[in-house]
Image (cartoon, rainbow, N blue to C red; front, side, top):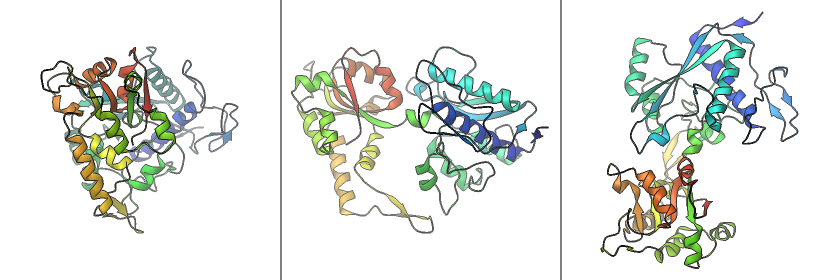
Length: 371
């Protein structure tokens, strides 16, 4: 007979492990045209199976349990604002199959888990900040939410306030498995305590991955070097990016003012891209000691020189346009895709989720890492 687990803490941890393991199994096979349901019902827990399409599949070491119809709720963030709808959660819950590959994968994953473990997976989405809900639930002992998925800038505060559980040492969570982010496990811990982590359960962290796109037409028209060659040869640097972009910017309507909607820019950025460029170029702020405690290591000549270079770059309004200067005036991400499709932006800092907005471009573009 199947064991039944009813205690809140154990059910939360076990279901997280189940969801993560199932998603990792799904990702190990199949193409874009067919959603693989790859959890092998006959494979023993903790076993590896042969996968002819790739490396051996890993299976979770989980007990055989039944949750008697328990509803397992995720608390997530959404926004109705035109500039933020692209960042609404799309990896936790799907109401039905609709032909979208991510939606359908989520629906099939959840359906399989619900059937196998006798559980219902739910999502409670809140517009904006989750702080009121999280603090109210914690103070009242309310168990409405099993997992909270706040924005990254808020989770440190929640951990400091004792609202989050330490993931190290919890039963059924093997943080050494490949579906957990190894860099997160290592870098987000403090004093060997870990209160939040990324994994293959979520898509939004991959959506938010910073990258750059370049307009191939503008590269050809201005007879510039192939960006891919620059990357492969190790010559793709901040200096090279600035040098190439300078000759592309132009006041197309001749009004003497460089504007996102009217003119052409060599480099399109966002306010937050400053830190991305800083990190990609090897800039540091914090390291950790042998006790796993952070310390500031910012003060170095190299870091100062890098900051000076990036500040000068970002403040050059004749050559660089910051999308966030126009936030609230119109849909900046829609305008970003429009200007790129109209060959009015050559290099553009972007997150992978927004690359999807460029699918209908007639002009060809490439994707490359930050310099």
